[in-house]
Image 1: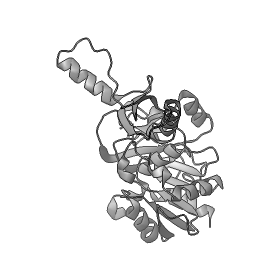
Image 2: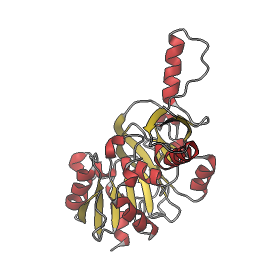
Image 3: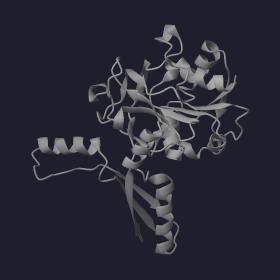
Image 4: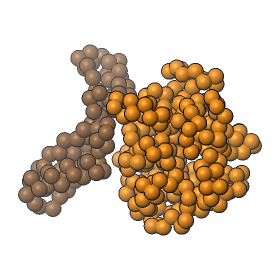
Length: 81
Length: 229
């Protein structure tokens, strides 16, 4: 089974990377984009285990290492493939 | 008085610190490899600049789990001095010894240049050897130096006089024109509530010798050393 972890800057934090990508998209003519946030995507291959247990453990990893909860939020998805 | 300089894989200002402390200021100093679990009697620990563990994930995120950091935290909790410079400041925020975080510069670029800094007050171990209202020049060299903390933390830093260094004009004026990276309140360096842990983005160890551009960095280490005199 696999864990997919999405880490993004918190909403109220200035994200200069997202801003730069946003203005590049404007330059390309995509006028429908209001805001861009750039984050990280981490995948973990896990040993087979109950989904709840896997999710709790990966969330713990996020709080300890994968994300900086002062400035980032995270979301964990567990898939069976 | 003995300084101990922690060496992580990827530290690159460790030798600058060593040279300045040993040869310019004539203090006892030794390196501490990050896998070591012994601070070998160091009175003040320095976490130097560089790219510890490649800055993978986030600057400082992996360095905080190096074996020596457990000892550094104990040392800090015993009220003994710890100085984090640049990447070392990032490690101190990641491990929670100092509040807030260092984010990507708002310019999105790596900035390497001398900046002027206002010493906010002299009522700390790290600033007491500067003159009142001093403005000093130190180099910065970082891609992630934009100090950020929640409103509550910022208010606390202000009310407890824990902001020690702010980016300013050579006359000590504050404005966004003198803030190189977008740090909140032009913050370049702070300390903890007890006053024994200090983190700063500029590099005092690169201003320890007139031949290397100046000696404005010396007083930080001299201030600490006086406490052990």
